[in-house]
Length: 108
Image (cartoon, rainbow, N blue to C red; front, side, top):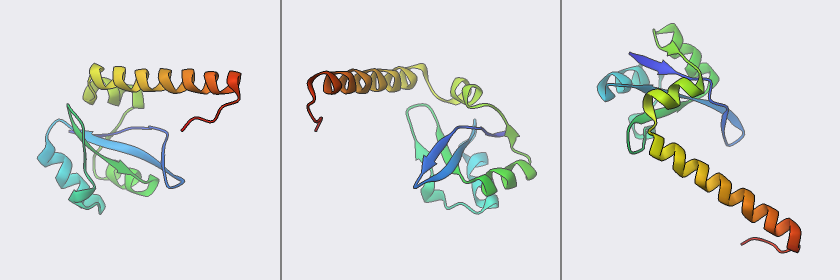
């Protein structure tokens, strides 16, 4: 089964969602069916996925992909370790911005 989410990502100003499946072969078949190139596939520790434009998202749903929330997609396909890494990076960035604001320095 292939899933698409409502992730509020942006690439080059375009809103993008994600498409993932338990089977990489099934995911690749759907990607080709909606007009994506296999080389656009993203790999992370626990899963592979594609970013989708709104039009490709809608086409995937028309072809049988199941719409789920971004939170559901994260629970199904993205490991807790990856989520912790992102949370740590976000916490670091917030700390760095607060420090910059206090000191008036520019972060490199």
